[in-house]
Figure 1 (cartoon, rainbow, N blue to C red):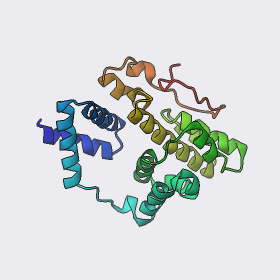
Figure 2 (figure 1 turned 180 degrees about the horizontal axis):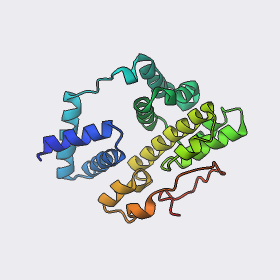
Figure 3 (figure 1 turned 180 degrees about the vertical axis):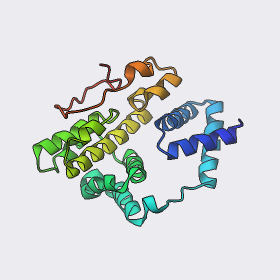
Length: 218
């Protein structure tokens, strides 16, 4: 497989939501910035493919969804909080777009996460949101089945913020690739193997632990 074909495959995987592909692109960008000639060539091929093949949104990501994502990008998750809560109803493509918009926005510090959660009226809803942020790599579906419809939106909005926050941390070097994907971390030579780092499904929203290791070892 030549470089152009590899770039095509990696970009399309990332666009479909493949976290391993996203992490590999992030790592390639970091290596290119550090001076790696091979990484620079890879980034050039990725950039060329993206420019030549822009995303064409179908019905699953229509004008209304694009407007919400743009609102998040322009205003941030606090000023555009209603848009953040509405995004999960639009499906995975819209959530992916929102995650990217948030990741490229202001730094999602713990205080900012608390500020976003404080916009929710009910303490339990705030707990759900914060839990999802700091446990976004867990399988939250069992927990979602125990919640009301609006609380499921809160859960998914929190997960969206959490993934965006981890992308920011990996990109800045504040966290390993493991924070995004155990499989990508293993492929890149980080210490924690996928079998040890795979998170257990979440069934209850206990007090959120902001200091949890991204490995989520049992």
